[in-house]
Structure formats: C-alpha cells, structure tokens
Length: 541
Image (cartoon, rainbow, N blue to C red; front, side, top):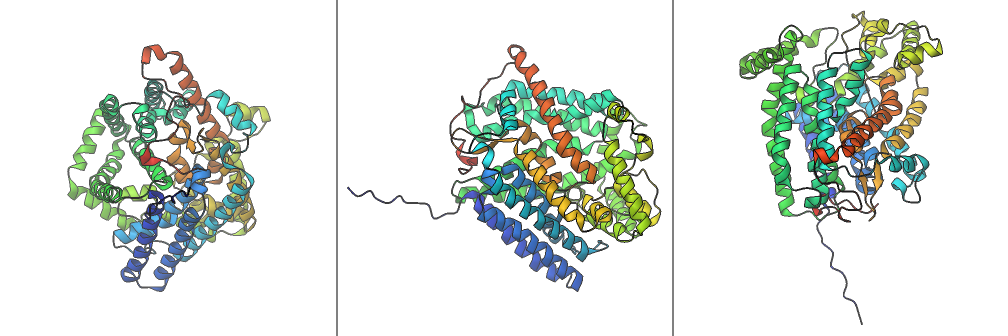
C-alpha cells in the first residue's frame, strides 16, 4: 500500500518571514542612505552596517541557533540591533545621515562590525561544544537549577506576589546607597513579573490562565508602575516591562515554526503602524521627563508628575529643548544622535563613537592610568566586607564616575561624576590593544554559557525560557555582549545573573508557601500542554 506524500506548506515559517523582512528593510535603508547623504563617509558607513547586519540575519536564517540556544542567540542579535541595524533603520526612517553626528563613523562601524564577527565566531564554536540545553544529559549546574525550581512554571499568584515585592523594593530602594538600598535595588527587577502572565499565555494558551481573569489586574498594575515611574522620574522603570514583553514576543515570533499566513502579515503590519503612531507621544513623554528631572529631589512626587504632564502637553517647549540638545553637539562631549529619545535609549552607536574617539587620543601615560582605573573598578564592584577581608586599600567614593567620564577626562579634561555612557569595547582596546580581541572572545564564551542556563528543554523537544530568562530578556538583548564598561559586563555575567536567580527563587518560594492566601492556579511544566500554543510554537531543537 503506497502512502501518499505529505503535502507541505509552500509558505515560509513566521520566523523566516521576519528575518526576510528585516533583510528587505535593511536593503531599503541602505538605498535610502545613498540618497540622504551621498558622501563617501556615509556611504561607507552604511555599507559596513548593512553587511554586518546581513551577516547576523543570515546566521539566524541558516543555523538552528535560535531554536537550540535562544537567549545567547538573541543577545547576539541584540548587539547587532542596538549598534548597527537599529542605527541604519532608525536614521533612515527619520531621513538622517547615518554618519552624521558621529566623530569617527568609519572607525566606529568598523569596530562594531569586527567585534560582532568575533562574537559570531565564538557563538558558532560554543554551539558545537555545548549541546542544546540538556539535549544529551544535563550539566551539574543545570541539575542544581532544576532542583531549585528555576525551570518550573510559576503560577499567576506567584507572579503577582513577586511583582508587588519588586514594586515595593523599587520604592524603598530608590536613591539609597546603603546596603539595604542596594538589596532593594537588586529586587526591583521583579517589578514586572506579572507581565510574564501574558508571555506564558502566549506559549500555553488558556491552559495556563484565562485572559479575562488577568487583563484588568495587568492594566491596573501597568498604570501603577507608570505613575510611580513618573513620580520618581525613572524612565527605565516605566519602559522595562513594555520593552521586555515586546522583545519576548519578537523572540517568540523569530523562533516560530508555524507557516506564515496573510493574517499574520496583516497583524505584523498593524503592530508596526501602532508602534509608529505611539512613538511620537512616547518620545514627547520621554523628553518631558528629561525636562522635569531638573526639579527631582526638590519637589514632591505629586508635583513631579504634574510637571511632567505640564511639559508633555506643550510641544513647543519640547521642540525648544530638542533644539538646545542639537546645539550641544558642538561641545566637547555630546550624546545626541537620534531626535527620538526612545531610539537614543535603545541604540548605543553614539556612545561607542564617543568612547572610541576619546580612546584614540590617549597618550601612553593616559593608557596606563586607564588600566589602573579599570583594575580599581573591578575591586570596587566587590561588597565592602569582601574588600576589607582581602585587605584592599581602595576608596570607593573616589571612583564614583563612569568609564565614559574617565575617557572624556583623560582626553579633554572634562569633569568627572557626570555618569557619561562609555563603551567597554573602546575601553578594552585602550587598555589591552589587539590582545583585547582574545579577551573578548573568551568573555563571549562565558557570557553565552551563563545566559543559556536560563533556558531549558521542554519534554517534547523545544528549548524554552525560564521565568528569570524572560525577566532579563531586555538586559541580555541590550547588554549581553556589550556594556558601558568592562567591569559592568563582567559583573552582569558572574554576579548579577546568579543574584537575580537567587532573589527570584527566594521570593517565588515565599509566594508558593503563602499560595493559599494569594490564589491563582499552580501549574507545573508537566501539567501544561505538551505543545505550546500555535502562535509562538518554536521548532524542535
């Protein structure tokens, strides 16, 4: 008896469609830059950014990396998006030169492309060495984490409890430099835990929870966080939850093995139009918060909210502020690259350009000072009791400045303490020269291994994200392979990531112990469907 052949859909998967779309947008942006600014520097910069972005997109398209090692692969894509692809698409959308407002455009994009290629090579070797999240038996660290419950699916009650603990920690820790304040600040990343509920619902559908049971609480919680963010003039607190959800959906769509359909294309188009429409008022709100920040610490929380809305409803005043920011580009130091402050927050090309320029002007004695300060900052990152125990004589208060500050200070005598954003890539080249390339390669291997501990293999073959992996998706996307400084990158990998795991497990453990009081269903991985919901079903790893 002949079995008829299985008819496969000719349509590409949703994930491949998104990658094709990004490639098409990149090609269109390259063509746009040739018209916007046909100077040699801009054309060369656009070509470098396009070629580097295309290399990453093809790596995602031609390899199973997104399925087997989702978080480390998404961090690699994030490095590209926040330095090159985002700059190319964003500046073209605003009709602005890609090389405009950069001190060293060719060197900056060349440096970023080179380090991205190095990270891709490291990721390729890393994937060959380490099998996908426990495919052939789990490593000892993974066994420990599974035993501690990191890979268990938290209930809605646990996530609500965890979110309010994080919100309370934000309120208690804001502006405090004491040990208590730092502990509270460490817990504040939990504030957006309730927004993992729609993430799990996207994966498991109504088997996890029903939308009508959660939407009102989520709406209230989001409004509360936004209000507290306005009162504290803390944009990151307001943005983190929305960006985290958005990036998780993007990761899910990029991993989706479901055939693309006309309905899906329409949904993507509508989502793009909605985001474009929202970007204008959100950009104005971000600028209004910058203007209102001048009064932070001298007015009440209620007055801070009123000031922010006052400026938000006066577009002419916001336009004057933006003009002043453009005029500041002639100063010794500036961070102006995008007119949209939201894009300026997400795309870090200008920070790398500034840092690389300052590093390129350093003398040999300046490089020695930079090396000494870099080593001191590694020690400063340790807790005070550890520093005293090791007998290290160092004054933390004397080092209350950023690497961006210090590079600007060494190069042009700028004052310290302004917390300018730096670049660990420029810092590393300034300290170690070409030897930093090998150091970065090794650091990438360590970072990849640490990130992927936050993902686990589902019993039907898919590699899925743990709750902590979902909460940290923005941090990994933006700072997984690059950061403001070398010590910030190392600390984020070897201290903050384990710390976040421990804090989440402690708070979730308390919530489970008090489950009878906080309600909500209590599903486990085994109790949920074997197959994720069709909309975001990843391929087999």
